[in-house]
Length: 554
Image (tube, rainbow, N blue to C red):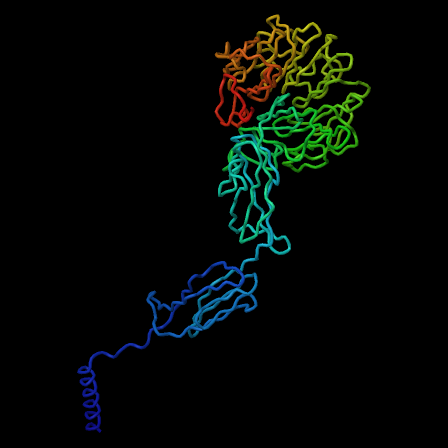
């Protein structure tokens, strides 16, 4: 037995010695730990092919050569794949393509794109002045009008000299004339945007007591607007925002699909107009629908003119931050918006008006017999009577015209003298102090005036002799004076009328929130003051005190 054990040990020693002489035992074949498919996520079009590759890797991330890969498709109706990894797209949808080695697999997600079946541009019409710009939006559609947001769009112009277009769809107007801007995607084109480039001649300017924009009615009764467009209040079929890539609109742009304008009004969120394009004078509004300011029983914003929902015919409109009002053909007053609701509601029954003006949560009207009436909230005495109730303004003065500011009202009496009442904190009453007035109070200086306008906290007027005067807040140069003559609450101001610099003779002036515009006797528009929203229309967003010409005019 002992001899047998010794023999076994000798045999084992011999084997080990033999192995030692032959070297180490070679390792087994590499083990595939994962498979990398490239590309692992991609989009292709129907009928197109794509080559996929599969790379087997071991646990250390090193390639494992010589291993056979098999391919499969999760839906061969969407895309097929050959044993060599060649993909063919059949129809639109998403499919998973799997590469497998033994029990290990790698996956690629392939999106077969819907075909483009149509495109259209927004807006489909545009009216610009030379040098003006407008951002277009292309809407690309697939089968069933499905929006396709992931497609490349190319742009072209039929007449680049009149209107050129950037790769992003931004129009720049050139010479007066017309052009069509066409968008295309994957061989499909729309009918494009019809662009008219023109030089407007204005007969009347429009702004409002809280407006960061301006409008002008032309000799052909068209409406052009410029400035803030964050709620679509320029009515050109677009929205632009100061914080967005497009920015403000510092040049006149034409309102979409509206003509024969007889009156218009603008405030910080809304623009309205009266048109005879559809027969009797009809009111339209656009911009922010908040508080039902558009009069269409909706709170949705719209960027093109929409009808006020009523059978009434209107001849004048006015707008404020809180509400909108209008005079009907029979001279009765109607309002809608905050407090009033989503459709025109009668105001001051039994009183017929020849003018109506809206301020912040209040409204005033000039009656047929030239008396002033005000109603709403009596903040800072803006209703003009000590009883703080709706009705006739105290004093029994006869007025030739009125102007409604944010929280102050001014008027020209029958003897051409000026009176103001309401908030006076920034000198906007022109009374030489910053005290609120609850009844009409004479404007200092003894000026004889022919017209007057009220902004948020400043007032301007045209003297009978032709000069222009402004008073009130001057933090952004809205008074148009070289140097403010005082300080109100640490803000530059003038508490009495100060002449506007430049010596212009204006036929009309309008005041906005922090800017003022005037129309000369020859029909040329100039603006001055704050310009952060492009409300001066000079092609910039830089404010200035001297009046500057609005671009695009002849």
